[in-house]
Structure formats: structure tokens, C-alpha cells
Amino acid sequence: MYTTDEDYMRTNYKCANCCASCPNKYTFDLHKVMCNIIHKSQYENSLDKFFSQSSTPSPEAQFHYIFHLNKKVEELENKMAKLQKTIVPLCRRQVSEYLETLEPPEKIYSEWLQSIEISDEVLEHILKTDLKTGIKQLFEDIFPNESVENNSPIRAFTQKPNIFYLYDTNAEWRKMTTEEFTKFIGRVEHKCLRKYLVWSNLNREHLTGSPQAEERAVLYMGKVNGVKQGSIEQRASDIKKWLFSKMAVSLKQVVV
Image (cartoon, rainbow, N blue to C red; front, side, top):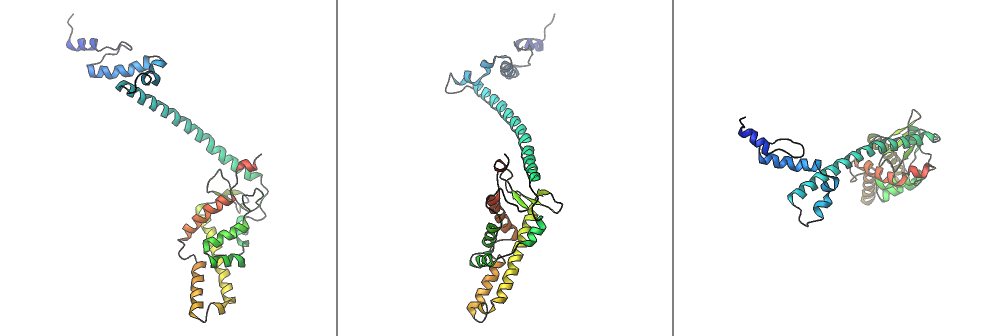
């Protein structure tokens, strides 16, 4: 029977492991490396075999190294994906379930916000420092420091970074959006401004009548309006981070 060159090449480049035929030596060499990995024992394929014998890895050892690294990365990615699917819903469920066990606050969020008053001490703090620092002083008085007994309609937990929960008008707890927190700070700032206007009318003689007094009045008005302290969004963002670090509690402290 007549044998063609093509038949001869297939015979010469036939894999001893899987009996596959390759058209040329280059393809055969590539196939042989992969096929040997698949058919060899676990030790033969392990990195120890290649890296325990020589300080300078051969091309074949490098190939095995890359092969094993890719496999390990794949395994770790799969494990991480499974963990994230488990942990995130668990954390969310723990927070919501804990909030449902609490006694309802005395006031819902909107009523509580309406009831906030700016004291003379807080206004004095603003005029001596700035608006943002004064509001932080106000919150020092309003929110107990990392207290489990906090009965306010705003809560925060270390398991949910930089997120606040509020007791809403529907008599239920929900997440507070970034826009809502900014409006919250805006309302507090407006209360500070109104407090200053009342105070300035009562202390008009200290704010008029001389260049120094008028300069002081301009300075105070700038402070109470947050001049040179960025936008309302920037001030709210800074206060939010500070307030979270102050009042956030761990579920491990409250769930026993």
C-alpha cells in the first residue's frame, strides 16, 4: 500500500499518551508538554519536582509554574466569590434583624430633626472656630459615644462602613441615602444661622458702631455660613465620616 508524506508525518509525530497525531514537530512539541502534564502523576506535575533540583528553573519548569499559579488563582477567585455571596447577605440580615428587635425611638426621624435646638454654647463654639467644628460639638451632645443604649432614630454599625440607618415616617428602619444626610446637615446649618441672627439682634451694639465691630460682624456671618469650608456636600461628607466613627457600634457588642 502506498504511504504518502502526510501519513509518514502523522506516524512520526504521534503522541504516546493519547495517540493524537500532529502535522509537524513544532505542534507535536507543544502538544507533548500539555499532554504530559495531564497524564503524569501528582508528584510529577508538582512544583517541588522542578524547583527542588535546580536554582534556575528550566523553560519546562517555568511553564509548570505558570500553569499551577493560574490554577491556584482560579481556585481562590471561586472561593472568594462564594464567601462574598455568603457574607454580604448575612451582614445585611444581621443589621436588619437587630434593628427590628429594638424598641421604637421616642420620635421618628423627621420629628427628631425638628426638635434639635442650637444652644448658646454651640453658637459660641462656631464663632470661635467654624461651622463644621460647631456642628460636631452639637453632635457630641446629642449622640452618646458608641452607646448601645442610644435611643435616637439614627443608628450606625461598624459592619456597614459609613452607612446610617434612620427610623422613617413609615415606622421602620431603612438606610439613609447620601442626599438625605446632606439635607440633614443643611437643616442643622440653617438652625445655626437662625440662632446667630437672633443672637446678633440681641448683641447689635457689639457688631456695629466701629470698623472693628463691623469687621467682627462680617467675620461671624462668614463663619456661620460656612465660608471657606467648601460646599455643603463637602462639609456633610466630612461630618458623616466623623459621626460614623463616633457612634457606630459593632453587632458583636449588641447581639449576644
